[in-house]
Image 1: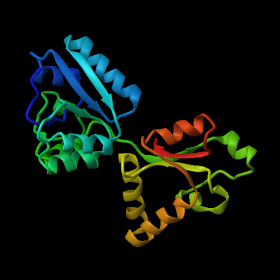
Image 2 (image 1 turned 180 degrees about the horizontal axis):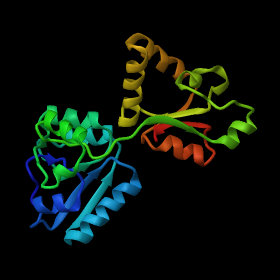
Image 3 (image 1 turned 45 degrees about the vertical axis):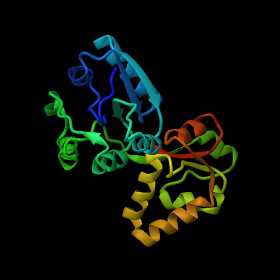
Length: 226
């Protein structure tokens, strides 16, 4: 299919997408949600419309960088999912096109407010709480207590046992940084991240990777959207 002038951010419903791309032969779909969600969306759209979907899954930060790099010669049609900040930044930099879905009224007020703040170049589709999970068996075998709060993760006993994503590539990790600044203030928030860094065993590219690693027994604690 001929590429649109800029990448469109949609609400992620098959009906809304098929309205804009009814005559398309193929849809190039950038997805920053969990891999499983991306597959569901791609397969659902393809089944509903008959349009072939070429899906690429990358973290929010990576996709934003790709969209920006391709600004003069766009390769994708839709960017769906991931954290809100990169989408809002793309809208601010005029990397994306406005779109108003006929199903927009079914969304929550906060999602519509996000769209209005970005001149309809992006819209909220889901929300999640940032937190951390842990492997209880590994906690027990290492004689470690269950962490009760964010500041617990900086304690010496958890050194080498915490995993989080890289803020340079992951929207989840960027949200973690922003959250700590909001919780503790700018100076103390950045100090918290420095203290936490001492206990980090790996910075992953993907925001969901740390909790998956904890489930596999590769780390004890993973910071993630719940």
